[in-house]
Image (tube, one colour):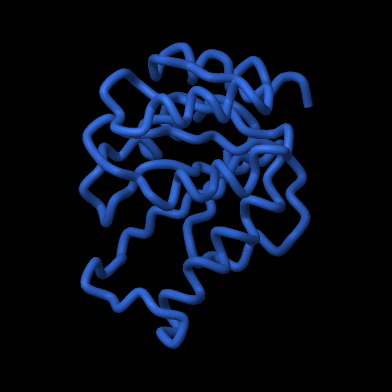
Length: 156
């Protein structure tokens, strides 16, 4: 397994393994670190993971296009999602995850998203409808989500 975290430039090289982008709740570091959990749970596979959760993220950073650190982060995420074979998308029930909602809309037609949205997420109905409409695999629990992702990786 190879893990590339933002802003690692390795995403711009051709991955020799199946690549996954970990889209989903971060909420300025307040959300469950599901990225670490899924990385650990899939660590036995020969895959490349693109993880946007930075170890050094400054949650006080001004989120504006004129901020070069912020702009680099957002562009890294956009590029990594395009390059990924599979986008795993997890909505933490205890946070709003507005960027994850935006990413769901952006990539809904890509045929490479797998979604986990547990009961209690504030916009769960919207996520369910998007997934139904665009044929996106939808799971209520992390375990179902993880197990399905593992099966999908083997299809490549």
